[in-house]
Image (cartoon, protein in one colour):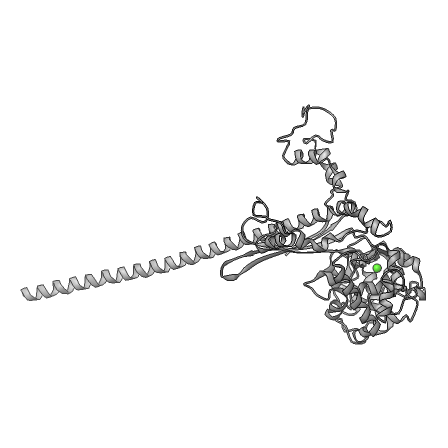
Length: 481
Ligand SMILES: [Ca+2]
């Protein structure tokens, strides 16, 4: 009896102890799951906060690259003025053409960049930056920068003007671009919408998308004296596209892809041969409508020259001569290191006719001089000055485990209305305005005085007037990816 009781008590204790163990184990499991979940959650939110911070940093690296580039372009007239005297002595009294400073923006702005790029600038210019303070990007990361002048490309948005002369000029340039016999297979095969479209059809489609009228743009070469033939049809719906022609200007380059017949092969051949290098692009939807022959790529130059040449010129029909010409232009550019080759559009025409400084060199390489159909017309569409620029900036911030956060920004800036840097605003007034009048040393500084004082930092009208002619140009397109 006593033994039984003892045994029962022992069993009961053991059972109780077992129950406690199970409770503890369950608690541990719950705690572990909870901790793991908490840790995952906090590490996920930490990573996302870190990613957001890196993205913001990268975006502002890119933004600063854009603003610095605008400033660099704005300084070009001042740089040109300083070299005007030695240039005119060397070039028999000629004025210097616009200097493409933007082409070197990545190197010239290296001092404001981060990492090795600032060091690269110091090595390039032989400067010692060790004693410089507050220069370059704070923290990790850098920006990558390419600036191209949109005036080095054929601007299809000129079609918006809609007058016959402009349409004729643009059509002639486009046909010049598409003309080479090496592109025949492209026009013989079926394009993206299952149609066979010849050069003239594609050219008309590009123009008709943007011009406001309903007449087919003829796109006939200069010497055929093209006139409009009938009305634009509803071809987009006939071939199953869910939209019509826009009959208004292109808002972006990408919009060109919506024009019928604009397949990948066409895009890669004529519009943008290398998506990573906007310098190779031939077409644009921004620009002043004149092509800068000093900065346009070789293919565009050839297109422009051939569009105004007499029929059957060797340079425009013979593949060998074309190749030699393209190679020569690239070589001259490379040796010239960006120094503008032509002082004016007139000199460009003279060179292609075998004259001026470089004409004989071209002839000796087997490139026959061109005879032009209409020189005066050609002079109307070429220039040696660029006013509209595309700034492609990419902010880069390194992350953990060798990862990188990249934020690209594409901005297009129009400098047509921009005033020269020194004349634009009173620098002292602007500085006062930016610092909110702090440290203003102007005498008689009674801010309550009536009347519009252009140097008054508290007068919003004065600030607006200063911004209207922003020497850093007007932004006409801005895209952050
Ligand atoms: Ca139209």
